Length: 326
Ligand code: XMP
View 1 (cartoon, rainbow, N blue to C red):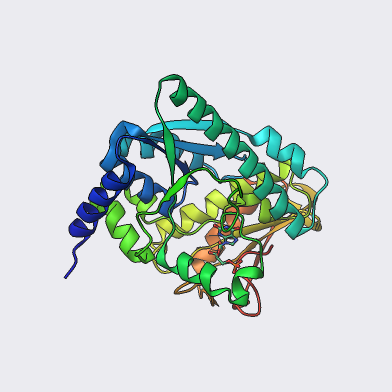
View 2 (cartoon, rainbow, N blue to C red; view 1 turned 90 degrees about the vertical axis):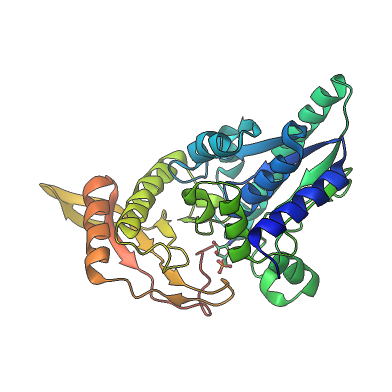
């Protein structure tokens, strides 16, 4: 029989055997999987690990800080943060096609990450050490899905799957390869990661970039960030975080509608709430959220986010709708 403790011990020993006295790099996305993988490898090899976090400017409110402060505080890991938001926004300028946006974000991400990686390798090289390993938070379902080649994985180009450079000189360290999500959460807990990180709902790699319909601009990102944090606060306050799989908030950047707010007419953007319940994200049902929670979210968003004058609810299951709008 296995326990969470025995998984941790086993994987720590395996990582030590694999990496030896060399160095490893781990990309943090802000998500559960990479955080737990990093924490586990850090427990195994300590300062031989450096984490890299690319801030693409498409994160939700407070997420970058969560990685920079809470994750580092909980683990003591060495972290390199690359602020690449300018670069991503310029690359995205003018793009409104979903697949085009995903490709741009994926491409820029790999470039920035490779550059950071190269810098770390050079720094370590100057210190006479070898960086030979790349840590990835691959889970068992990821292994099955990318090997299985079923159609579902190809509906959208997930930017963190199969996006590795071809001339990869690193060996992969994948300590979560045999685990399912709930087990990964337990391992994270065992490793002392904060609840907010361990219980985090899924968030797509391309971030808010695929939750703005139309072009991604700084102004639209700011609007969406404000609306999104209100929805998250109210869902948390209502104790619904564990009941729903996730609740994307989508800004219809290319749509405007007439409203009346304060003393006058407004011509603003709608946001759409997309609360879903799911076991594995392959299929999903729209969550029947209590009306009073929906009402609070709607009132707060329209009162507190200037520029948003309408809140709509997406009541489509998956299929036919995907969870994200792009
Ligand atoms: P869809 O929209 O395909 O989403 O129904 C299924 C689940 O995957 C998440 N998602 C992504 N996660 N990179 C990710 O890491 C991506 O490019 C990506 N696209 C969608 C989505 O949030 C949902 O949980």
